[in-house]
Image (cartoon, rainbow, N blue to C red; front, side, top):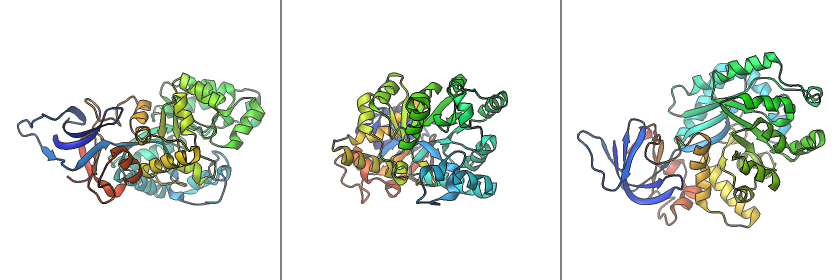
Length: 396
């Protein structure tokens, strides 16, 4: 397939190229250049007036709770989503699997229509929870990266004695990891130092929630005399989720160890827990990506997430922030977490793309393409979505 006369956001830096051609072979981008000509019998798409950008990567979701949208809207974090006592867990355990599957499927379809071609899900419910998501997404052109979790949490006494995970738990964990892409740890306060260190043995993706709330930080300081982030780092994660209340010192350590951060600003706002300090993270040299978090409390919409993060960050800190930086968080920065395979328009990358109508009523005229996408683009400005080289939504 040869795409002609398109504007694109090119490479990791999302450089804007006004007019070029893109050759796609199979599921990969093979050539990019203004002088490419179609080969014999090659399909040609004329994309005059369209901007091709990378498919968005939603770097943190809990899609399993799609059945519980806006339940307990005024409840606090612990009441809603605590991994043991939160009413979310009761809803998941007491809901019919067919109903859960139906609403997970709806969320997947919603994401692809909004240009999200990859999402990283923290999957509760052990192997059953993993299979639930796999089945729901099996016939939808979207890429779920599934981070599983065993239903094992340590009590205060076990944590204080620094007891590691029992053999039965280790066995369950090994079995779990043969069925998913890695481990999504609920948080350091649910585990001893020894248990957190055990997780470093996992060769797949490791991720952990950290410093989401003021209260969770206080608990860590009180019990362990360490910040929640310092303890989270014992598991040597590939990325930390939230970091809404991370200190400057902790961010410096995170950056030094080349550990990524995934922020979820609208979810933090919905829970009245504050806004992550993006400026501080970027100044520290952290690789920052964006997620929409629980569908229960927030819609899986990365355009709304980018717009919110950009404006609230500048409003709170009274400091300018480049819109391109925000757009990179939803594409190339997130790609860094996943081995740079997706989220980048470049030769030999997977052809996940969004085709944006530059002359749509909300975007025209586009004087600053990066700003236009971050604050004005939406599902309504999408002409088509491509997944692995195939148009799967809309048409050109």
